[in-house]
Length: 311
Image (cartoon, rainbow, N blue to C red; front, top):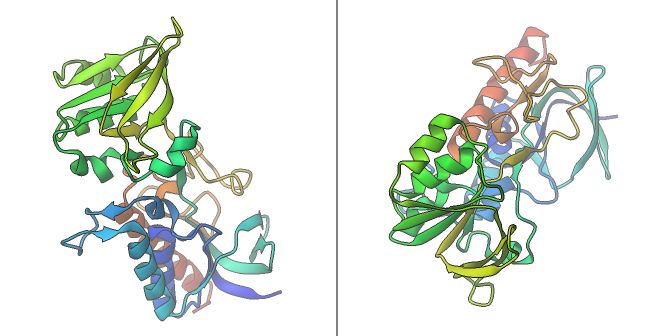
């Protein structure tokens, strides 16, 4: 069985940056990109907040450029899904449907998936007025009326952030009380641009035919009545699920399922396994922070291997 110095699982900004750095360190990394290479950024049309691109860049294009840069420095990138890992002994074993390899060090950068509402229109409208990230996309909605779905801290943060751009932000919550912490609730309630719709759900997102969100159809969970609300954008803020299913049995996770790393490091609970990007970050969740932790994981892995005599 083939043994590699570094195996990287995941091909968003964290994984590809780790691939670039470990490649440049002559560790000839093997990166499993998955069947949907590029991660969450491939769902984003315009990325305007990644440093170095004055005019912005399309999400898929940014990931393509990063991938080619990693490959230029010797990273082998394979579009296979990892279906199993064995972290009980080193070198670690990583399995896909096509091959099984061993890795002396493992970098987990499998990201997180935004929880969605489960509506057919979501697939068509994601990146076309439907978003899961206010800090990524809020800028594009100047002067528009927006809807935020959710009742936790992240929903309050998104709503408050969006009031910088929107003419009005309506928060829709399926219950009649918020889950958010009191301080976040008070901030949101004190904001004159935020309106509230309680005990309701989104039955449909309108605008699929036009290729752009035009509104929503809402249903009251109390009366069963439906109403349509014209909005230019819908922000789904009902949480994220970290993609840790393969690793949760072997690595320490927090209550949200995110991988726990040592403070100031990418080291997980198991020596030789490092975590980067949204799989270990539920606070910032930006392309640039993911790339930064990808760099950290690569340097940590390189030092770990050097201490063991692998160069």
